[in-house]
Image 1 (cartoon, rainbow, N blue to C red):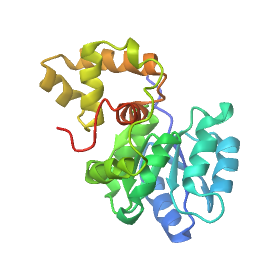
Image 2: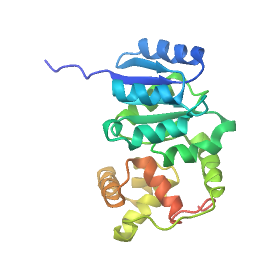
Image 3: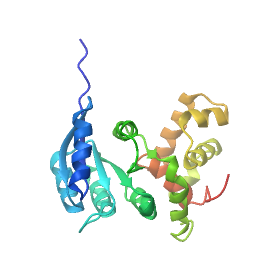
Image 4: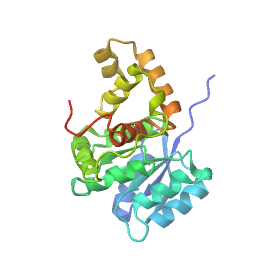
Amino acid sequence: MTAAAPDIAVLLADDHALMRESFRALLDASPGYAAVGEAGNGTEAVRMARQLRPDVVLMDVRMPGTDGIEATRQICSAPDTADVKVLILTTFDLDEYVYSALRAGASGFLVKDTTAAELLTGIRLVAAGEALLAPRVTRRLIAAFTGQGGPADAPRGLEMITEREREVLGLIARGLSNTEIAEHLHLGVGTVKTHITRLLSKLGARDRAQLVITAYESGLVRPGAR
């Protein structure tokens, strides 16, 4: 008999107790998920991430003291929590922070009015190593990028990628799924996954979200381009 997969351990980081209680109730009622702790600010989130080693931290952006962006940076950059994934929760008026959160190492973001089903799916995707870039706020994310001053120097490794990998990277940055990329380039989904694996290795990217950041920072994809 095959053993059941372990629950996805989730740390909830939000300064609103009612929001944390709502998330905990949802996770406790959903098979395959476990709320393992609650943090009311970024400092607590970092401490509890190191103590509990959750699979995913559901991280609010704006919290007293150490905010969600700095907490994300500390969690994702520390060797003992490098495997912990961070999923940012944001609202439309906070979208200017999303770009910084992704640069800090977040694996994706969701808006706070997302449905319960979307939230659970997002947590599972991020725990599995995927990136989650909500289409509803992607345009605002790109707008936030343009406010950062434009492309930076090309990241190390960009010169090593092939023309086909550049195409795949550009489509990832525009928010296409693996299936959509495969259809656009007339490739198999398995081939697309192979290209993405090679991109992650060559560019030293943590996950798909970091590939999006690389694409925009290098100028390979420009805001507003089709």
